[in-house]
Image (cartoon, rainbow, N blue to C red):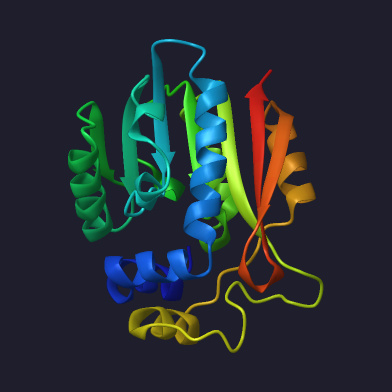
Length: 219
């Protein structure tokens, strides 16, 4: 993660502004629905340890039933401690008790595996994604689920130009510049780490963008 993005994610963006933005552009609901589908397919192996890396504020709990998480021994990690505090409040309201909250940078993770399932949503765009995936690989998941953003042709910015943003998200857009991850390169890289693509699904969101969920299994 470059210094601008690290500063943005740890110092600039407030949890409330992040939640408002993600809800406004429809990505919060789309990503939650993709996560629920992923969890439903992964819960068949019990007991299951699940890491959601870059979990943010756990906004997905606003859109999916908490019961889809109860089959798992759950760890939520994020680089921003204030996001995880909001995530903990959401989990408490949802009645989820078997949850660990860990401040962690997935590029240089201090987490100890193995985790049977790891889910990563809209994180790779903000870090050195190859380094991040090597960190995830060391945690030895059997199943790895990744959601990335795909833009329409001609749009390279992660946040569409002209979109009205709240205060700290505007500061983020002015200061930091995420780089989208090409799905073909991602699939090829994970293949070389021993993971094969088993499923993919997508959801359309605002500005003609697509949230693409890729599911992998360790060979």
